[in-house]
Image 1: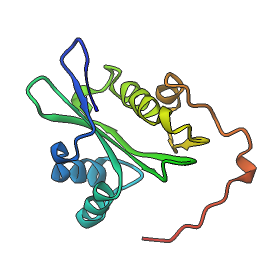
Image 2 (image 1 turned 135 degrees about the horizontal axis):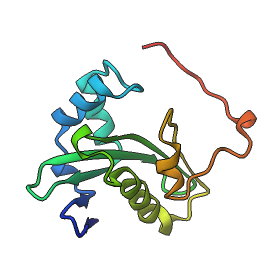
Image 3 (image 1 turned 90 degrees about the vertical axis):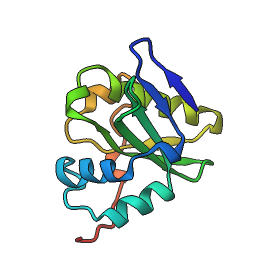
Length: 143
């Protein structure tokens, strides 16, 4: 899938275009949910996921997101990151909307995500708070 906005940003699901080194840098140094993550972990995540990259008019990667899914009932939107110099341009909402639209033909029952501070970004793409968060549980491990 490829989409181009009027301002020249391009969104692509072509995994060969993902700059894994750059994504690792973003996640390991600036993403509160992945600080210190190992490059090998990021590489494995890219290999095992549906990836979305956003590129500027010169072709440099400026944003990233990935989906973990069975493509039957469930998907997890994660590792959404927009480079600081490109924030405030609607790229996060564009990414979330592209994910929603890309997954629509699968008729998944739910697409989940977790965010500390970007609720408004995802709300513009149709995401809402969990209706019954008390039903959710997690099995966590300390890295």
